[in-house]
Image 1 (tube, rainbow, N blue to C red):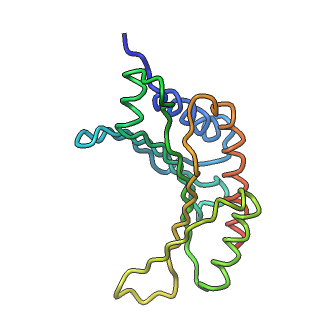
Image 2 (cartoon, one colour; image 1 turned 60 degrees about the vertical axis):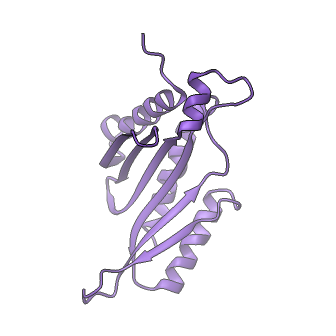
Length: 171
């Protein structure tokens, strides 16, 4: 009998909550999903990307990751370790005015999320294209790992993500 890991349980909880927002509540559209087992380093990764149904120009992506150390700690039931997963949030959007919009984005994210969750904004542009827009990839990294004890927080986390999407669409 297969005994699900912390990663498996969190993945199912996140996936169910996000798909409910898409299928039942009709608030979002899921645009991409990944479920990866990296055999070379024995890590797991799950990601789901979505946008607000009425405002598709800004996307959010939740990534859940578990590395070999955490997987081994759980499977081998190491008493001195608490296995967990890393959670990352990404927001993708196009911007034109780097200084003004990036500053507004940082303020929005600092207001909605904890001030210590300082967003990292990475701008890119395709060389040779005659465009004045930049792709902005905004990353939020949580400072601690999560496990099944945080499963009750998933709906609140998603509400924060939806609020962030609404505010970023105003930038």
